[in-house]
View 1 (spheres, rainbow, N blue to C red):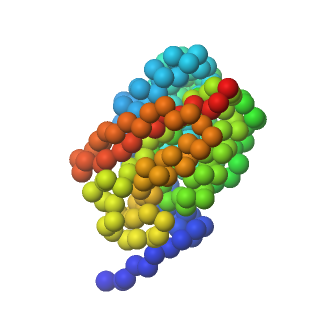
View 2: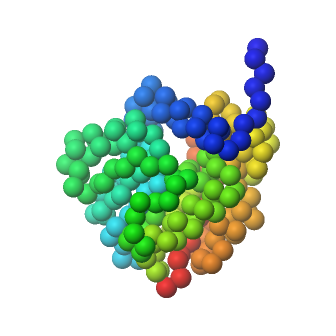
View 3: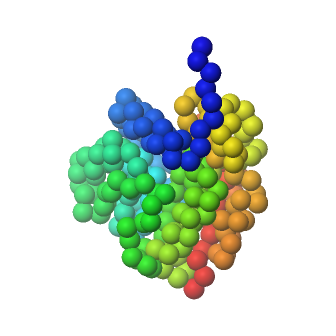
Length: 225
């Protein structure tokens, strides 16, 4: 058996992009049509704050983006998988939601292609805990803060260091561990608070998902007005 060695930086990120691309091509609509529980909560939080324009980062094949559109929001959905975005584009047309959902292939490690203060709310389910370095995560948070309007809300979910997979599998450093081809950056509470630096941290809500089960936090933070 070939011994695998840890990877870092662009090499790991590109390998993960290809892995997700292949996964979406082999398993179209792999997460089904129903929205995640995190998206249902986020829609309520966004509506309570009067949001109209929602940015979803790491939208995958778009089940949550379509849910936001059905809930009356205008949605800008992005993901680094062209296969996932093609599936979302097709699903939006089939659902008659094409005018409410803008789809864009984008690597979140690059600056967001949106203007300052141009969105009311941002949602990211399991994106920030992908194969991203701490530095890249903080860069993404800064970009989210740039494109959010003052008082805008950011809801994201991450697997955390209490998860059963933390500390096991192929270690890539920086609390990134790989299982079954998927690399995960497990969040500590310190990292959550660092990401929220300069924001109002509203909530860190623990929940479980999947068969392991995966242990996650749902974080809600607000940009100062």
